[in-house]
Length: 476
Image (cartoon, rainbow, N blue to C red; front, top):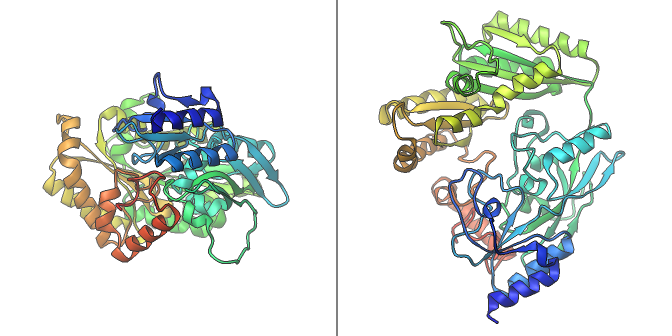
């Protein structure tokens, strides 16, 4: 038997014949979420325990076969599918889906990496707690993937990215050893904090198999408002007022450009998008959320005072406040429908960028003008998490232009233009999606050589044979 055949026999002995997939339709494992690329795996291996993950890694390491860790495969930067060689093992963690322990007194939950985010949210809510990570793919993304990409979402303004929610990890190293760091401690000053190496590393340093995460008491009520604003400067001013009036109650603050909302009206006409009809469509709208631990009346009073101050200062043109949970969900659904509406409109060039909140209006004004100058007619789908400075500043092909050809021919030049302006504003070319293989080469031009050398040193120290997710994040 050749090396690969011997490896497959070994892997079947570890996880069982039914969980080593080599034939049939493997699209769900081999094609990326955005359907931009399709790879070919030697096998898809689906362990059910951390010990099995460790044994799989040891077997692959012994034969020099590289491993692509995969959760829900919902990533945006082609970071969790195999290459086209047919010589990589996809290690699917979806069977490691147990919620091991909810510690109410410690306000933590320990969960395996294959657990679906929505499943964890619902399990915590059933026990009277909130796990606050929330993003569009929460019905299919997994906790391990969220940690590996340091996912953000809509509540970062209050609770932080996934990194801030994590108190401990269990990780299988590139050598197949198991590090158990599931302490749940908020204070542990005993040397390097290793969990932060693995969070956001996209499976290139180790394979996360479980995590201990922060949870919070459920708020007494959550209220949602949808406001029309005259400019991005006004949206930033409204954010400042929201911090002042709502304080820690401000859990979400999203901005949406008129064109982005217009796409929702066009492709999902059943949705009632406020302020988007008539001659005076506002250039931007904001959806914001107030989570209150006292009462609904207290939360409404805060919202009323906030909106009164905003109207007086001219940073809000009009606003509606949801009267019930169904209305709140409908308002949030408008925001969440923008990526789907954009996909219906055609292929597009996506940017997941981060700029200091105070500088976002100037960045957008400058970049809008440059794109119109060099790519006349390109349509800007600008929306995102203004509360934490993260914009999804996407570019749609001009009307009547072949979207596929536009993406093929203009993605490189448009990325270069946008990312150069991001650099001038001391921003980041990836706020929450990661680097994967899609942005790997771009990172070389937008990250300090000192930082890149330190990152390569860490990679080579922890994975000297480059077996874990090779070709992602860093050029070696």
